[in-house]
Length: 388
Image (cartoon, rainbow, N blue to C red):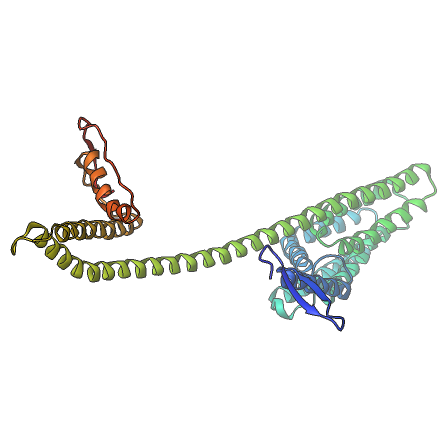
C-alpha cells in the first residue's frame, strides 16, 4: 500500500506476475462529477438549449417578473399608439388593434402568473419556455399589425411615426425580454418585418432608406440584447459559484467544529487522566520520600553500612526528581488550558547542576564513569520559576 496519494492493489495472473492497479483517492469524486455532467447534458438536450436547467429556470423567472413590472408601460404605450393612429387611419382599425394588444398581453400575463404560482419542482422548463415563446409570438404578430393600421393612406407622417414606434418597441422589448433570446426574437421580428414591408411598398428611396435603417436598428438592438443576456447568465453563474462556496465553507466549518469538539473532549479526558495519575503516583511517592528521608537522616537510628545510607539518599533524590516530573506534566496541562501562573524566585545555577549530578551519578557509576563538578561559586542568581 502506498500512502503518498494513491492506492495500489497487487494481484497475480496465471504466470504469477504481479499486476499493479493504480486507483486515485479522488475516483469517487471524479465519478460523481462525471455523472452530474451527464445529467446536465441530458437536461440541456431535453429543453433544447445549452443553458443549465437551473439557470434556464432563473432566466425564465427574470423574464416573468419583468413582464409584470412592465404591465402599465406596455398598455399605456399601446393606447398612445392607437390614439395617434386615428389621425391617419380609421378609428375602427385603431380600436380593434388596441383590443388585440390587450388580449395578447392578458394571455401572456396569465401564463406568467401560473408560472410564478407553480412550485419549482413541478415546472418543466422546456415546456414553459415553449408556452411563453408561443404567447410572445402572438403578441409580436399583434404588434406587427400596427404597421397595417391605415395602410392605404399616403400621409408621410404616418410612415415616420410607425418607424419611430418600431424603435420604441424594440428598445422596450430588449430591456424586458433579453433574458430569453427566443422570446425576444418572436416578439420583435414580426413587427420589424411588417414595418420594413410597408416602407418598401411605398416605392420611394427615402422610405427604402428608412427600411434599411429599421433592419440595422433591429440588428443593433439584438446585439445589445445578447450582451444583456450574457451578463444575466454570468451573474447567475457567479451566484451559483458563491452559493457552492458558501455551502462548502459551511460543510468545512461543521467538520472543523466537530474536530474541535473532539479535540476538546480528548483534552478534557487527558487532563482528568493526568489529575488521577498524579494523585495515584503521589500517594506512594510521598511514602517513599518520607521513609528515604528518615533513613538518610538516621532518625530511627544510625545505619552501620554507609552504602545503605548513600542508597537512601539516592532514593530520596530520585523520588524528588520523579515528583518534579509529575509537577511539570501537570504544569503542561495547565499551560494548554491557559491557566498557568509563574512563581518567580531567585535560583542558583549551581544548585540545579548539583541536582542533575545526583540524578546521573548512579548511572555513571554503574558504567564506571566519574562525573566531576566544576563551577564558579560566584555565579549570580537568576530570577525564574524553578518549575518552568
